[in-house]
Length: 254
Length: 254
Image (cartoon, rainbow over all chains, first blue to last red; front, side, top):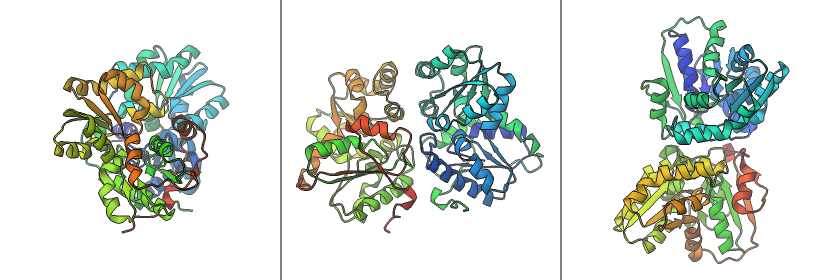
């Protein structure tokens, strides 16, 4: 499983809870986080390098635990790596389609929203979609401001449009956002919230037999300033991270 | 001149105003911005690559227009590149020392504050120093929220300690921060604000003769999502950026 940084740990946690005996390898590209403000070409290149690193570790299934990478790179990754591949977009969409009565909201990074991936798939299924980029949500979480007045104000600023549009379901299209769930849920009262991390874990049922030693290896490309705090905040425990230089990641295989 | 991203354009603008006939080359490492959350090793490596790229362009003076890079990498850069080198830390410190009556506040990224560079120099000059990391300021500026209630709240959250401590001078130790100057100035009423970009331009007097064609070249390692908007917001005009892959930057010369 790879992510642009630490946000994907919310997915890792959900998977570990569902498959406690499976061996998990996580790569967070903290030397180049965030992906959400970068161009599609750069997101694809970084994603290929991360997937190459994990493939060399002998993985059986690859989870792309980053919405931006899933939005831009999933097809390229699928065509270039021979392992089963699960992104975070499809499971979230599936869950939203299961519960929505017709109007779905999607929030994510600028890159994820601009890619139009969520919108395209949901519209092809007959849903009305309102999408909104929320660039301050990731910095808020990284700063530990998961609740309080500033957070509530920022939530209100971004989500007012979706509330007025009357969405009945809201996809949290970024792995950091589940940490703001309480504030989002309070503001979007009565709207069904889709947390992709749980949806991804369910989607793995067809690929994972849950036999193994239940190990968790965490690799990061940089010990960035909040790393240990964020690992503990999300995973609920300390897991020592291993550093790998992003310059040593394998280049694109083609 | 290089910076981790677009923030250094505030320095570029100040230099261009002071030296209108000088040829300027700017490299913004937008593929790997922000530097402010990364480890010292990574900041130094990225800085060497940026300086290498500019040296190959045949520059006469190198300005490190990023406080994080200036705080961690200035000595290494100075030892490895044969051109005169001006960072943003020394000019800011000099200006603060000129006006302060004894107690100086410093705000910057997490990496800049953690490096302790500002604090060490100011204390060695006999000043009392209160330093504070303000990780949400850069995302606020990048989101265009340079004023308004959310911005004022965040300013209050970070600067209350400095206000209570009674600093008489405040160094804006990050090139993005001058864009929040109005809100900061209002909250820190009566405190002298040091904007390093102006201080850097003044400091160049001894190196620059201002003869040339007055060209400005902008290079960026990624066309990230806000690039054009930020260039226009800071420079007050549109200047077409040239993209260079961060993978093609020269490695460290040693």
